[in-house]
Image (cartoon, rainbow, N blue to C red; front, side):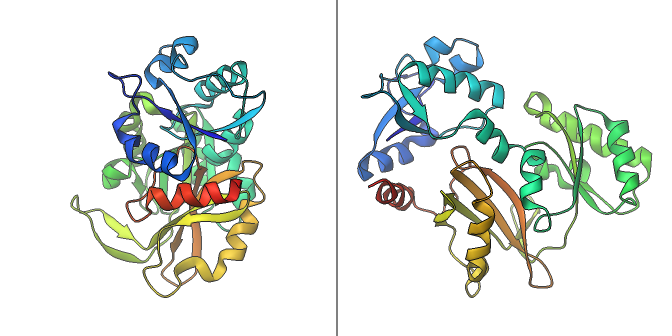
Length: 293
């Protein structure tokens, strides 16, 4: 199995600086690594994008994508280019979308994640209608992938019983904040009070939250527990939920609520989910290598 990383925009034979440490950790664990150009992929030149990715050593050789988030359309193009080079990417486009887009993942998380509703595209009027049907609770707005939580008060958090004019202002600010990174549609998620640890340098709350990486339904790596065993007393439950996904490599963000119970606040494709600073890349790639061998 190989790992595919994005290359340096100006030095295409080198890994992107944002993934240099992971690239070295993967090679140190025993993996062969290949490179591709995200810039060329975004420009629509798939051949140029995989110019520095060598051919598979044998037909159907597995390869894992590890890099920046992209739309399912771009991922499909990359997937097909890798198949043409003889690879069998571990994650198919359908599996990527299943973990990457909340509406795709939601049926697998229902009951363990905030109640959510959504509309396709930038249909603010449709989103308001959905919000009213929920009886206008405190909520978070995001697109199918990400929120604008760095602009919490004006573009992310919707207070309970918000009137339509203010709702429209918040959604307009959210859409402006996401810009051309907006993904597919608008999602409204019921707000839950989480355990707060501190405020960050921007004054935004930092909650007791953990990121778990799952490989084939079993824990691969995670941020360490802050208090007691954190969410790991319920690891069997998290792994059982991970096994509902066809995607073999997913991430799962779990947070403690004020009443002490746990909530899955987000899942993602493991190939594009960032590694927190508390998870050493060497540990992740050694663990993955051990699972492969």
